[in-house]
Image 1: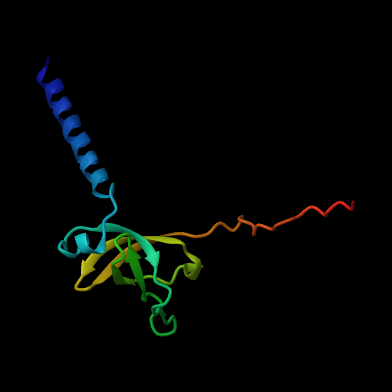
Image 2 (image 1 turned 180 degrees about the vertical axis):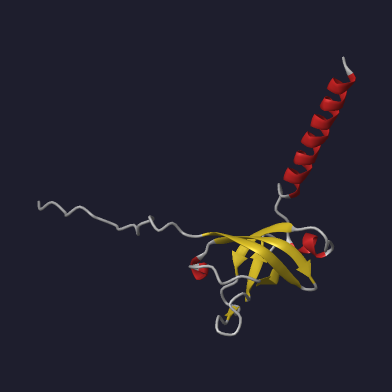
Length: 134
């Protein structure tokens, strides 16, 4: 083999290793507890909106500041700060995935992915057959 072929193979191997490393950073969902110790790495935390706690959004004062409380899969509650407008239909969300990092006791989210109930689900109606007269 020529030296150029060997160098090319090494570059390809390094590129594949780099891509795998980047892909593995977001391959697993974390909890607020595991994200608490690390401040230099972004985490994805999956959980549910805590509806009995306050959500704060004042678009007249600051349209890019929205806070809410979320419960992760270990039932740990944490305040989430999103420096973006409040997403549409946020109150109706079923599940939330936030990407960001812990800052103190709060989680600063860079992005929010919501799993909302399908608008195509229809309420189930119970239809009964009329009783036949004897």
